[in-house]
Amino acid sequence: MTAELLAELTAQEERLRFRRFDNETAIDLGLHLLAAAKADNLPLTISVRRGQQRLFHASLPGTSADNDAWIDRKSRVVDRYGHSSFHVGTSFRSRGKTFEADSRLDQDLYAAHGGVFPVIVENVGMVGTVGVSGLPQAEDHAFVVRALEEFLGKTG
Image (cartoon, rainbow, N blue to C red):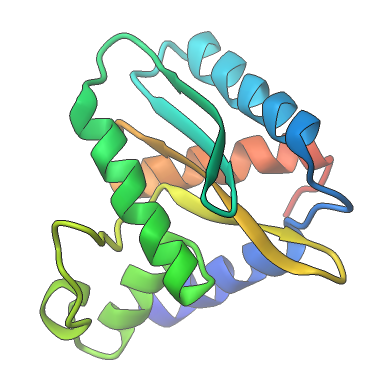
């Protein structure tokens, strides 16, 4: 099961790539996620970054400053490993390990829980992150993937 999930997560990252990514793209993407979260009445905090610059941030009712911290911790994992935060946690589990025990990273700064996805530009590589916090980790990840599929016009 974990190997199949890991293959699916890898395929998502290969498929969900941008042709370009600038401030306008980031804002449009953030607004797309915000509209989707509002439509489903989801308690989410949303963040879109290019490098270390946060280009979009919004928090809906039902969230708190803890969700901001979760996004920051998950984003650091994506920045460090170049894969979605859910992919990284799943990768550790697929090897019979846990991120918390085996990464040797400060758990106050890093969290390999689902919800943050790399922004990858074709022929360039990873340039930022897009993420949410507020739901269980698999649901956070699924929400971001679904929104990216809609935004980019790509489906699995």
